[in-house]
Amino acid sequence: VALYLEEVLPSCRSPSLASWRLSQELAVLAAAFRDGRLRGLRVRQDGPLQARVEISGLRPDGSEAVEIVFECPENYPLVPPLLRHSNWRCSGQVPGWIYQGDLLQLEQLQVDRWSFTMGFADLLADLLDVTATAK
Image 1 (cartoon, rainbow, N blue to C red):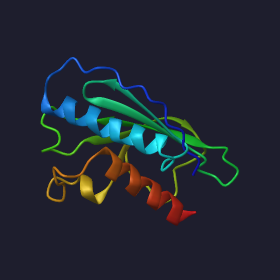
Image 2: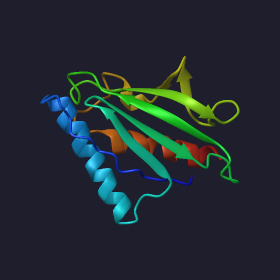
Image 3: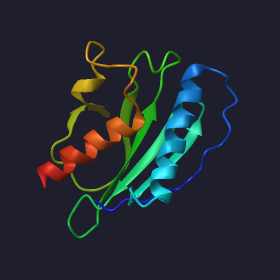
Image 4: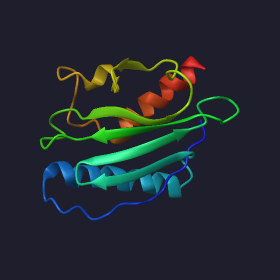
């Protein structure tokens, strides 16, 4: 999977734990990109409680991409976020991903499986692992 990281980390206007936590998680991803550990992932923070990630190269020829919106509730990280897919540039569904409408379903997003120690990078890694395994 080809990944690009676009470091757009605007200052959060909300002083909430959720917005602070999300901005910190995105800063860690930006550092991983600078160190060369991540490639082909484009991430941007849209607001205090929302981030977008574009994953390109879903096919071996790199022709397809998807954008996922990471929506945090006010009480994030105590409550899991929603992962919503948008702006599809691929045909059909991504192999290995489970859908409920426009929401992506991951086992760890279930309230009884979620841990406040998990975050954006963990969910992204799981999505990419499933995608790589399904190819």
